[in-house]
Length: 399
Image (cartoon, rainbow, N blue to C red; front, top):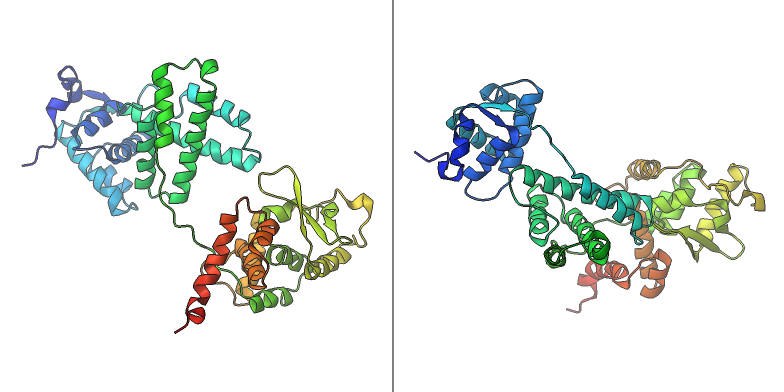
């Protein structure tokens, strides 16, 4: 018979307590000590126990059946093991912890100050993303401490956090984003070491975070793109002047959805053929070429809403009043499906990919496509070239 409980791992002074009354954290700490190695089992068990307390149910086969009814097998197995453990130690009374902090107050203050002072986080969306990432990390720290495990803003804990996210099936992109946020917080703390009054061992722990490696991501195009004839069909068969104008800005000019929502009438320079674009997370507009085909469709829309010809007093007005990005995505999906162009990997952002891809196929230089799409690095634009190379490989290679 396998040994369920490693009594040598449980302090003798607390064995008596285990026969009568335990807090949630004490019970989970005993369970974690019984496991052969670190895993996510204690965290799943803790969620189950809290469910039982909230629903006023016992930790037994009945509550187990209700809680696991809709869970996948990989989530049920840890709970089954925990239930056997709980029965083996005599099914003690379990009470809620007196205090269950999700984010330590000091850590929360640290996050807020970092977000406020971080110069690279210009847009509200970027700040929200980093706040979410850092809160997730410090929640993990609090949970580990609740299980009696050592956890802090250190290289070891951050590496464990990465593995925890991986076990939770977070995408490699999200894991690396969360890791980047923690690394930038650590660098900020090091720069502020005198103000934060950090000890030498704390600085060493912070410096170790820089060595934590993220997950490898193959940089490829995960979005499909339209062929030239398909783009022409999409624009020609869309009836609404407003929708056609949006599609033109996405598919001809290569704007992001958020950039379309930010456009003002003053950003449209029909005389010089320039379009001023406020990029994501940016505070300044960049001028790009305003293609004739796009100008024509925008003019038709402006005529329909009574804003043509443009006048100086219109400059501050939104091109599409109260337009949200989710509305743009809805319009694009609707038109793609209606015209039979919807396929896997095809979305509103695919129209931006289409614009870049077709510019390259027209012979526009990589550097000019980079400038038009406003990519920070040429490497990003080069992936368009890789996609083109893959698609023409068999035709171009001599026999």
